[in-house]
Image (cartoon, rainbow, N blue to C red; front, side):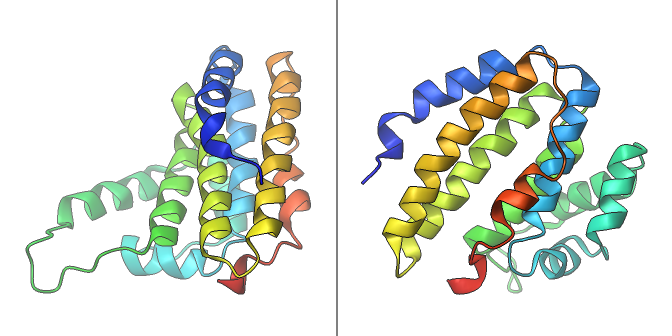
Length: 183
């Protein structure tokens, strides 16, 4: 089986090196591509509504990223962070996929402004696939996806680093038939 642990440091350095010089429109396209991916995960909208207390739809969020109309989402993230009290009687610990969804969408909305968030999107997808590999009944399937994803990231990041704009449907098209709801 493919061992992600053995190459993750090298892959992270590759992503950081290749993505550091992108302009904001390239980073914005990365954020939009990953939004499409995160909405393929089970209960993304429900997770955001429950924890951040905002209703969200994929098309609306994509439009808001395009038009830099994201203050409501940033405020919801800030309010959520402030309101967390792990000692409160009603404290609700997040499931790992809820953390991934919230973190992922936060990376997406910050990609245009903060270059490191473009890198975080690619790395979070690796974490998500690794999670599915570890907790599914078919780890070999997810391990193969993980290996293919590393290769895909290297190819697409090379293209982006040479000035191309990421196809905003690339991750949706790549993962639209993936059984993310089977765990």
